[in-house]
Image (cartoon, rainbow, N blue to C red; front, top):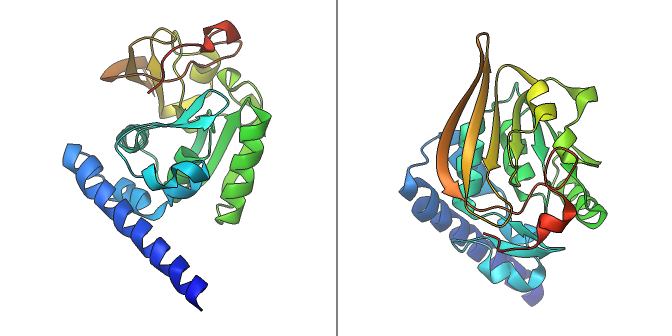
Length: 233
């Protein structure tokens, strides 16, 4: 009984911290989409970080998840989700599953989410956790995310959680009309710009959002593995 009570208290505390995170870090910085805010209030971010970092899960910053990768700052996750502009009818591709946190946020909003991760350990971990949490609208794939997933294209939104030197041509080719590619653009290990590429009947339109810093997108249409060294946000 005591152990059960302690667990309930811990979960209640994490819920309070999550709601505080949304109020201060997300709404407080101008994210107002009610569906995005609701998703951030629901997804248990503390389960998507290493156990030793659970007490920092709702802090205002990125955290290391192993294998040289990170879980993004909560505000960045919220902003990328809002920029993707997805709804229950959307088929979404995420490039870079990581721990699965951004995947879960997208799955709260979209009808279908496909997510690609090139590191087997992360892909397996994300797949198991997402299934355990009941995200049955998610399909995880092990592979080169810079090439997208042509057999499931076109997508209503593509969210890339790693920086590319330019919008990857294979991902642009997999955008449906009226859809968006959200991707950090810039050098590996340097300052980048979160960028939105929209596909309209008249062609592609590129709009810059905010400065950022992500791990590099490694793959045939991204950076070489040698570019993985350097600072991470």
